[in-house]
Amino acid sequence: MTAIKQARMIRDKTGAQIWIFYIDLRTFGKGYEEFYESTASAGVQFVRGRVGEILQNDKTDQLIVRGEDTLLGKPIFLNDIDLVVLSTGVVSPPSADKVVRVLNLSKSPDGFLMEAHPKLRPVDSFNEGIFVAGMAQGPKDIPDTVAQAKAAASGAMALMGRGKITIEPYYSVVDEDRCVGCQVCISVCPYNAIALNDRERAEVNPALCKGCGTCTATCPSGAIRSQHYTDGQIAAMIQEYLSAEE
Image 1 (cartoon, rainbow, N blue to C red):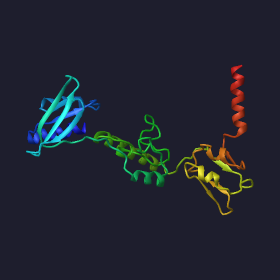
Image 2 (tube, one colour):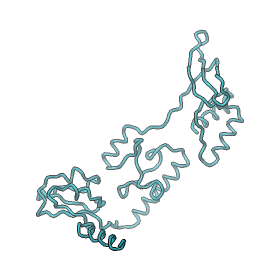
Image 3 (cartoon, rainbow, N blue to C red):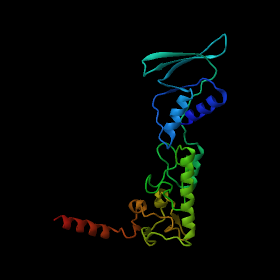
Image 4 (cartoon, rainbow, N blue to C red):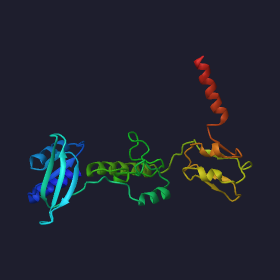
């Protein structure tokens, strides 16, 4: 859509001849298909196929483009071309890694910030109070960016309007008498919710802990337990499930 928009603007303002080579063309937004059709009607040529070679004319310093129209099954030669533009995909900037480290956020495989849920929580991060929107979450156009920005602002206003933050009761608890201060739990906690107190013992911040149980599973001295998810409670749930099956 960016290539189509730029081509349409150049065509309308200068009347230049424009060709767009593509492999797959999808206009997924509201009114985008109509915009594509009107751009084609305005004189922009859409060619399904790859550009195989770009040469320079030694006499005129202009370019020669060789490609293929896969729909017609024949080669294409475009002479006296003034400019060739490569449309590239948007990638996550290197600075995103610093934001991820400082705010303890998660990244998607393509390098952008990850939302808590693509449908149910599209602008929430896994950390309460931190929202992702626009190009930080992935490549987007202006309407989608504005919509997400409004959703993120609404989420922030709702959070601040509470006055008090309600904490879920599912967080880890440390038995200081058994803790040896090895700091293994600190190194594996994905939410930075554990720190050493004045007694050099691990201490969990309930406001940051999400009850994932990573520290409980890795603590070598067994000093950490997940509240409301103790071994006895889990065993009781399993036993109840098995008895219901019988």
